[in-house]
Length: 349
Ligand code: SAM
Ligand code: DTB
Ligand code: SF4
Image (cartoon, rainbow, N blue to C red; front, side, top):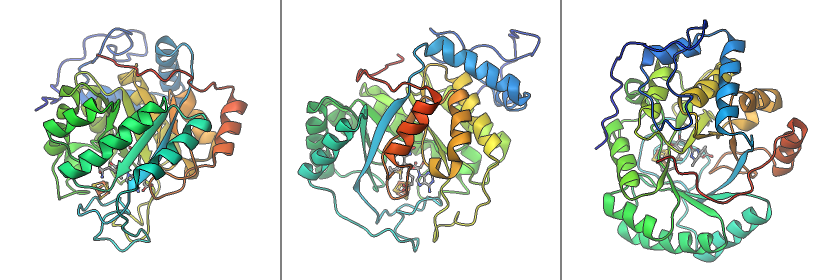
């Protein structure tokens, strides 16, 4: 079990006259001990100062400034027994998503080859499960071996994992496991009731113990306060070590889900969230995830400036739309951003 409580330690180091909390810009530091108060102070900085600090941190830790491209595929869609208030795949909500069975291995490999040909670095397989059964793990391990053999990095997000399941996935060659904290512990209770925050921490702990890299982030724009966004980032940044990959999803409000009518977050607050993630987790790949289509080009450009350096690439996320690959190539090219060429895992430990 992880102990990730954010002890309220005094703010000891001030680097500049801006009074910015220090402690995460060292390239060697795996994990800071961020308090929620410190992170709120970052959020409250004048916008340009926050962006400058984020850009300095980004350049110090990612001198190549490249952007990682990850392709997502839904290997098992819909019919999920959980009640995550944002999710179109929860069986209990009346959405357009229909339940499907697990994809065949051959179809997954066709999609993986297409992702590689399109220039993707990583292939992420997502399943709408609360947790996989052991027979599901057997089928997914075959997919992992096949995708790995194509020379792609592998990632899976299959719900909660027991220690031995995590071990089996690692042995099959899984590089990353995605399991999100989603939000702060106190706001979590108003979004999901069918599994607890500690269940998520336990899965992350099992993934770490099995030797895989952790992909863990969450969703902003679900109606949480800034303080709750700060508390969410504090939990991520204080994981020891913090995740190698941090997907920051912008809520995609889907008709039929409890969050369908949620008012959109101020785009500048989204950019601030990316900047604070970059500063507090300096060596992580911070990924712009769901909701990019709604953000538009200018806000995405600001997110890259704020330190985002990974995107989901391809027309579809799991069930919702993503920008066309061609549009993304154009945007990256216009911004002069290179894409990541290496397929090696960036392990922080
Ligand atoms: N069922 C597994 C689980 O929940 O761990 C894996 C798939 S689940 C769809 C992966 C993540 O997608 C969720 O944790 C959530 O962060 C994100 N997500 C789902 N629906 C979303 C939405 N409408 N808007 C933004 N992010 C969403
Ligand atoms: C993550 O944090 N975002 C991705 C990935 N991990 C699996 C999923 C986004 C899903 C958005 C809603 C959908 O397309 O169904
Ligand atoms: Fe199920 Fe995952 Fe959707 Fe929650 S987020 S309802 S666990 S598919």
